[in-house]
Length: 187
Image 1 (cartoon, rainbow, N blue to C red):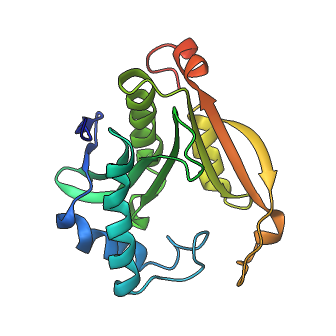
Image 2 (image 1 turned 60 degrees about the vertical axis):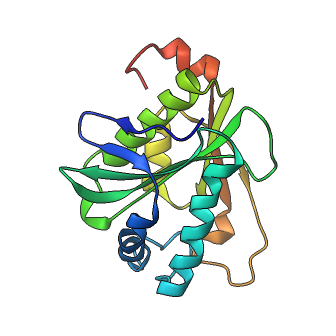
Image 3 (image 1 turned 45 degrees about the vertical axis):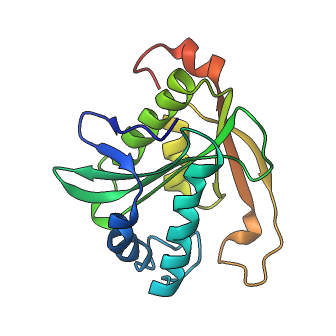
């Protein structure tokens, strides 16, 4: 099963492809977008390397991967349902990254809600989780608005810790049963 093309009221989500590289360069070159990830903008060479890894994610588990989102034909960001690094079957990590000019318009949650629907209803996933820095209040609010609950706060060792990393990382999650019990459109 290859990745599906998905739609919401405003967003067209298509499997990430080479044609999206320039959009990814624009996205990752904004230091504010990368604030809680790198603490700085990425170079073109770094983005090209990450682009190859993002494309490869779609080969690891059928139906999962990265999606490029557009509104009215214009790229707004990307969303992921990615197999977890630990390889747990039936689980996926949810993520999203939007161009700054599209922040605070409800697009992150709208696209993420559709990926949750797709993951649970179409792919039969058992659990979806998301992680961010504890100080990333905007992303945490998006996770909570989707019905994900705080599971844990944890600390990692970093060679070059970002400001706020002393507060740790957080994991939020939702199970298939929790998602389905909400009913269509409730999350």
